Image (cartoon, rainbow over all chains, first blue to last red; front, side, top):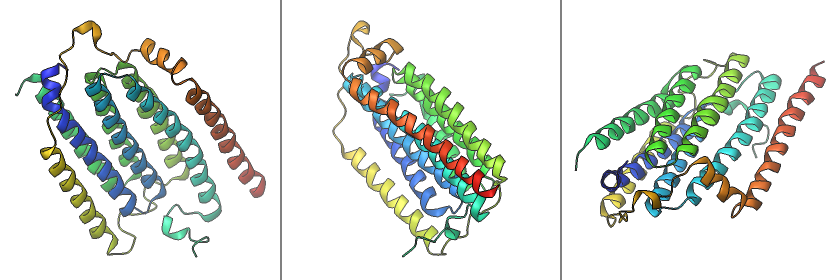
Length: 106
Length: 174
């Protein structure tokens, strides 16, 4: 987008990032389905990525985009391990409700 | 200042927020996953508009593609679409969580409205940093070489971890 549009939109883009991040956090707190909680975490990561890209554009630097690349790589690794964990838990407990998984609760 | 770009990106932001709300409120986990794909796709369009074409393509291929397919695969493998309803936790948790979310968003919008306006230098087109694959690759293999190697190792560890975890379970049940 052009510089003029970007100056107009920059606070709105940071605000969008904020709203998406908060929605992800509320999803993590409210839902009890482990997979949906996991998807909410992905939503939070995406919101952070949007802020990174917006600030990279504002400062005319490439480093923010490189950092988003790293966040995506770590997210991919996290999803692979996390979903394997959920599958393993489901096989032993027949449930993915996080309230049912309380063996380690003090 | 209202022009076509502002209108288009405003509509995209609206789509992203509505889809995000539907992601965390859908009873069916498959619907949640598909709404999350919409959020990620609209963010990819944002990345394109913010001069990050490579990241936009990675967003579509890795996030909306690979990661969400993995999610859908696991949901359908476990038959977990409706195993857990929306409301099963402690009754006071939901209003408290929503209340805190509203407070955080209100605080953030207050800060944004009071922030000094961002100054963007009006650069000539050839000096604008475009996040092409070439530019990202240059940065990755010079400034960010060490983190790049660490992250490749992390991917290897995650791959082995996922294989080991599922294999262990199979031996147990057999």
